[in-house]
Length: 110
Image (tube, rainbow, N blue to C red):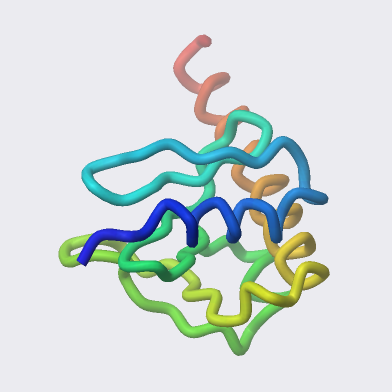
């Protein structure tokens, strides 16, 4: 079952205070971006956020499962109603991912 775009729009609206949040359709599901950085997916109307050490420290109780067969584990965010939690999770996740991206760009001379 593919995700419904209405669910994706609602999910993105719940995170809007974390930055410039938008989505793109990917392989029948949706990728979620913050300020140009890919950090989450919506698969089968569920939100999955990349796991970072800051996210693990801040939210140790979030379930970890792959969003689709063959994928790495992501955090499964079951309570998308909690805007404050989403904002904090998105901010800490994207801050760490941006640092990692910067390190990778430097390592490859970009």
